[in-house]
Image 1 (cartoon, one colour):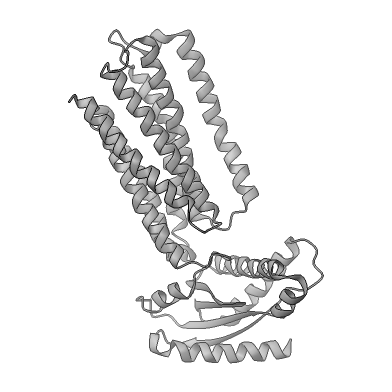
Image 2 (cartoon, helix red, strand yellow):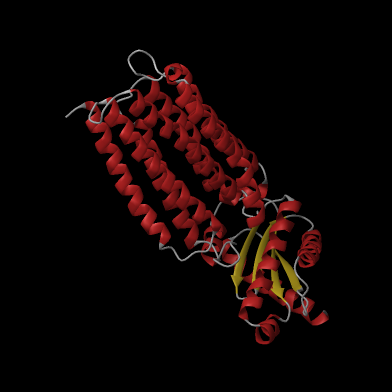
Length: 376
């Protein structure tokens, strides 16, 4: 077996693994756009590995090796690689910015596709008009080709990594640190693996090994997140609350804050459960915005039904409640005109950080929340 034959076999194995993974992702019962982007990410890796296998077969002369075939396989690699990097950027962006709306995502996607279209058209024209510029006497790509191959993907990958790491500086994002670290690890791994493959071992699919491994690791992490995430509001659920309670934490004063949507049963009964779901999403987004603005260490989850729970490390819980109310008013004003109000009652109680005493603090916060509801 030739060295490029081994290269193709490894690529084929990775393609099979990713195709099985793609099938598994499509069967997941989740509406999260992050999973839609992850599907695209996996798909374009598969396409790139197919293109890369064709490149290896041409280099090994299994397929005819001439100016046309060499330019063709290298063109497709240069066309697909930026798309792979673009999808990596989008997945990283959504993973680190869950508050983005679909319209914001579509606008960002449109802007980021422009450089890919420009490069694709420019390469096609230059490959057709000046093939000798891109190949040496042995029909090998010149160094400038490898610069073009890596330049645009490098921008997308580095930008995604830097933007994700910068967001870990906010206290709110610490709970999702695992996601950011996985996203951040993709770029240096790609740089090392891709660089090693180009400059040291073109006959060994190091890049393929790394990409497949990190995609599988990201998928397993996302599956774990799915178990700990409420599918409607994309907040933590009670499984994640249990894990949080047993984590070590700084010795700052904490408060348990209970949030309950007012007249929720009436909304469901009068306008239907779909409208009730929309009301819950509005409240959850307001809670996210409040946590983001306050900047202190926060834990936020949907406790059940129309109840939400916050754990805030703060000395002024009244300020947290006030900010939540402000954010809720802002979020309601963004929506379409409704014939009902979306309001919430809140109550808080001190918590000493001991998991054993959490239930008592939650009960006390719940009592104050119902007192607030009666006064409303």
